[in-house]
Image 1 (cartoon, rainbow, N blue to C red):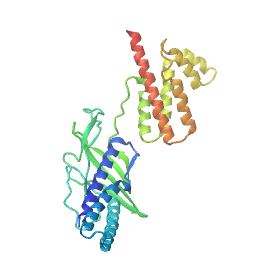
Image 2: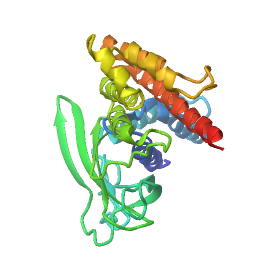
Image 3: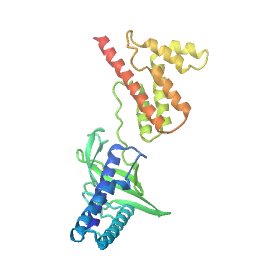
Image 4: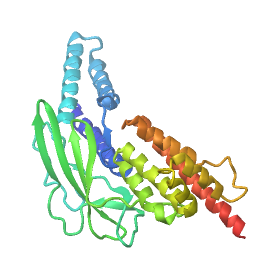
Length: 324
């Protein structure tokens, strides 16, 4: 009989490894990837196809063959479920597994941690994307994990060490939480460097950076607040102080008042079809007034940030042309 368990072990292990690589390379704090059981249907059907050819080659249509195939189908499904629901173990390049799992084990064999390409915050790499291998020089221990089984649900929290292959400096440690087939990035020892475009005014770059950071952690309202603060502070920086003071005598300046005064500071001939900061300010205010942390808020944040980028980049290009 074919060794279907080893086939399933290999496919599931590869899928777990690719899901982990996707999580570490493309997701931010508290974002997740999820493995779906149906992803293994093709493998299961392929194995069953081999069984059918083997069984019916000798006695096509035999009732015994049909019964055997049914038992093997059930056993295969049970094996898949056991492997997916078992504890998962990982090992690094510098800490290979001690040996093969015992015969009859219902757990996945130890899975090698995939290499990943992520940002490195060392002085040498300066936030650039670099290849990171699992483990690090001098690492002598296995991957640490905290395992809990509660109400039929499996939870594991892993500590995955990596080291940049460019600078080989301080190791980067990821904290990953597994809830059944869902993997969530819940921590990292070095926060990824946030690249702020040069055309963003220097005085407001801290607000831009903070907006990106909290948006990556799925705090859409906080991200919108930081971007709106960026626009407000830029208004105050550019608008002549005498005009600001004149408004303050009547009360606190409103966003639309500041936006009108800011529009007057733009260079003559600045194209009106470029995204305006007034619209961006209004759109951000709408997100805040709506008061919901959801996909709609996240999508709006991405679009508004892109408009702000276009505005400042166009302003930079336009000013450089005028300076010639």
